[in-house]
Length: 74
Image (cartoon, rainbow, N blue to C red; front, side):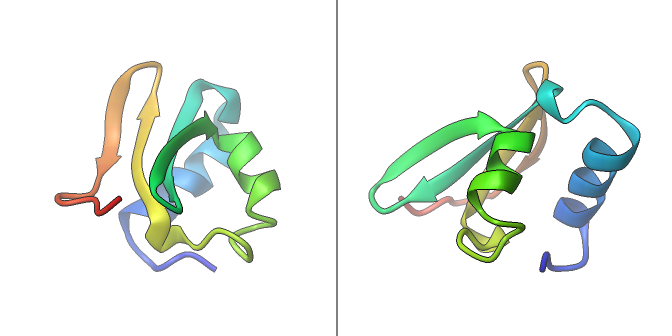
């Protein structure tokens, strides 16, 4: 599952106390960066089994950056 910390807080709040469709998740997929809604990410990652949280580089909510890795490596 997710590492404890900021990512876990954001995902938990978005999934259980807010509308996950308002959130965008940016993650590394091989040598590219993909953007999907948070709810799409949870489905595609099969609850972080196929796409680990370590590949998440940024999370935004309606354009506002909530989480960003300092040096995302693509």
